[in-house]
Image (cartoon, rainbow, N blue to C red; front, top):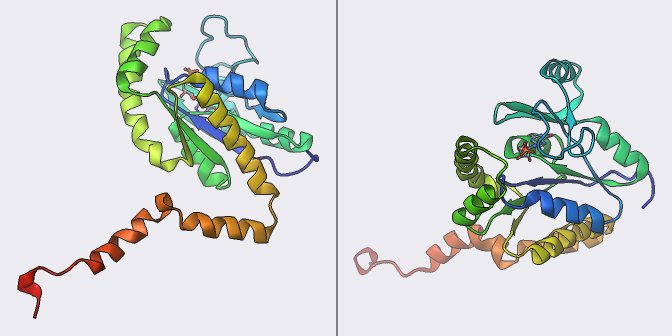
Length: 232
Ligand code: 5GP
């Protein structure tokens, strides 16, 4: 990849317990030239987490100074702690000619999509609520109260699924990783097309059944026979 090409920003969101971290780690190992944006957070490290690896763990005051200085591309309050994506990671990825992967919540994803509409957003869903609950309990990282809060948040978060470009249902780990890899590759391919090639692909895409369903409803309605009472 040539340096200074605009990075593709991949935004991954999922309710906790959806298997997102495992998928993200596997994806990063398998896809070349894809950098992980290590977020800043005010929450304390969990388990074996290390500063600068999963997160940059900083005190609240430092985080608030960074907000004032405009150092964040987006930031949000999640479960009472600040989380934020540093602007500088985008520049660093661009310098290297790499793409950037963000693992952020739905509020952050909406902010990024507003600032970077070309960003590619992916929502990961557990196959059903029971599975999500089981995964959260098996993780045994959290108190019951925290698990209940995460489940309530999950119910709210999944309502935002239709704001994402892609949905991956994490039923089978291997298959989900393959799906994520294909999404990264297809978006890279899309960016490498000429303007004319892109126009052709977009036009054909508009006619796909899944993309036409909204436009087709009023057309179908116009073809329906009127009830006998309405006929002259
Ligand atoms: P956890 O504390 O379990 O690692 O993460 C809690 C939530 O914060 C997850 O949904 C995760 O995606 C989100 N998160 C992590 N980093 C960021 C960030 O930089 N910005 C935003 N908006 N959310 C983040």
